[in-house]
Amino acid sequence: MTDPVALLQELIRCKSVTPEEGGALNYLEKLLAAHGFTCHRLKFSDQDTPDVDNLYARRGTAAPHLCFAGHTDVVPVGDAAAWRHAPFGGEIADGHVFGRGACDMKGSIAAFVAAALEFLKQHQPAGSLSFLLTGDEEGPAINGTRKVLEWLAARGEKIDFCIVGEPTSRETLGDMVKIGRRGTLTGKIAVQGVQGHVAYPHLADNPIPKLLTLLKTLDDMELDKGTAHFQPSNLEIVNIDIGNSADNVIPAAARATFNVRFNDQYSGASLEKKLRAALDSVGIPYQLKVKAGGESFYTPPGKYSELLQSAIKKVAGLTAELSTTGGTSDARFIKQYCPVIEFGIVGKTAHKTDECVAVKDVAALTEIYREILKAYYAGA
Ligand SMILES: [Zn+2]
Picture 1 (cartoon, rainbow, N blue to C red):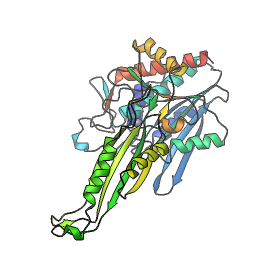
Picture 2: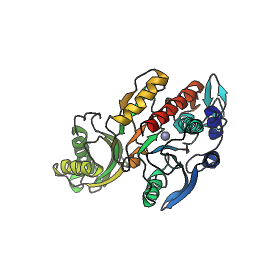
Picture 3: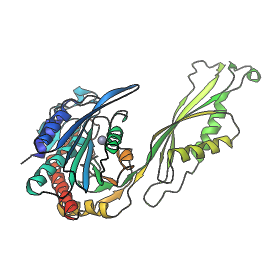
Picture 4: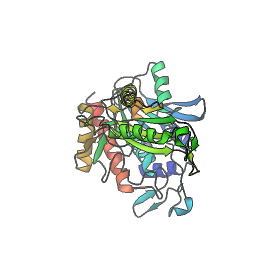
């Protein structure tokens, strides 16, 4: 039997801080290949971003095709001296497995791989099962899931349903499933003025009050009232940058940065249009550069959310809330190809010092994933 806790310890011991593969994908490739999965290592490159290694492993060729997706890369340790347990040690103490990535998201990977291997020992499902594992989720996310999906589409491989193992549980394992995530857009706005002496303001043009007027317009906007399954879209001003160290100089330019988390009422493009229209109506000249960080995704409640909820209920005894809160994930790329839902371990210590997961949660999550596999192929 594949022990998910031992598997998690092995994965934590791989120093896979983005963009390093750290041995994590090698380990999983070997394990999956030994269990009849056809494995592809996919290393992608792009301008101004590190090369990243990915793993796609599939068993079976028929439909329906269920895919578990995740990332083996982890965020940096931060202050290593502040950790009570070695960040790449995979130590077990007080009923928890400690280490960077334990909850985000090697814990879920260990659980879904162990669940699949156990399931395949007992069943010959009519259909296929695959793993899409990237090393580029915590980083720029350019050479990861998005390119693997493009590679799959070019080969004519179709996924019918995808589960992303991000740590979606909030307090208790199984209390939350994500059926959507908001999109994100960053705007950099600048106003040009004319530099001059503060004592002779008629010879200068101060850009700061103008920028403040524009920012007030953005901050006052009600983007929407929320939609059936999403909270309202929200804009936050995150930085104002004047860069003026003198108290007797009117600066030449003023800049600010804002970020919007938007729901399924907008695309990045339609949101940009709305923001520009509001700014244009003020009548102050400005420059705006917008960077779309990802569209929202939404899989309406239905057979897939019910599949997850009933497996969770059976093992953990609770009804998972269907949520669309939180930051972005690779599901924003997957949603272009198939229905996608995120479900994984409790995320409380993600990215923190002494990141850890409860041993009993890893075991229960494995059990839930196994129930999902049983129900998915039984219904096929
Ligand atoms: Zn993650």
